[in-house]
Amino acid sequence: MNRKQKLYGSATFLSLLLLVGCTAADDTATNDSSAAGSSEVVESSSEAASSSEQDESIMEDSDTEESNDAPYIYGAVGALGDDDLTMEEMFTYAIQDEQLAHGEYTYVLENLGDQAPFNNIVTAEAQHVAEMTVLFEKYDLAVPADASADHIQMAADIQEALENCASGEVDNIAMYNKFLEQDIPDDVRATFTALRNASEGHLDAFNKNLEKY
Image (cartoon, rainbow, N blue to C red; front, top):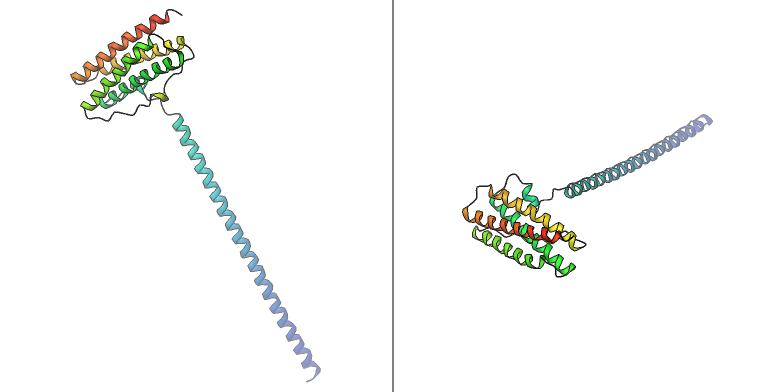
């Protein structure tokens, strides 16, 4: 083999080495680029998940705020704000308000002592609840659970208790007057009328005791 052939063979060998090296470098670069792309996809997915969780949290907070801002619908206050009354709703508002009155008078007796006129009227309120229960049963309606404990006004002294309860009786009377304007059966009308009249007597008793203060 002459010198030119040797030089040619060496040059060819070097070219092959360079070609292999470039290919390897390109593969490495491609792999690095692929890895970087995968990392970006993972980060993007993580950010999307985080954003979704934040959106859900905001929606939950919003739902909670709306729940907290829900109108007070219970007893006489609920009835006076309801302009589309059914007979079942009237029954429900009425027994709620009688349960609430009984609960408030019981609270006063347990926490502020055996005081008139609470010690007399509390028995009457229990009777009112019983009268409303009779109507529920007669018209085959489910009697609602007594949730009055969640709505009791806790007075600091007897004067405040008298004021709270007098205000409650005013609302109770207004509620029954509103019910009596509706088209209702005679037996329901008779019960609502009797309960309204009893509340007027309770209101007089509370007002007379408030004159002492």
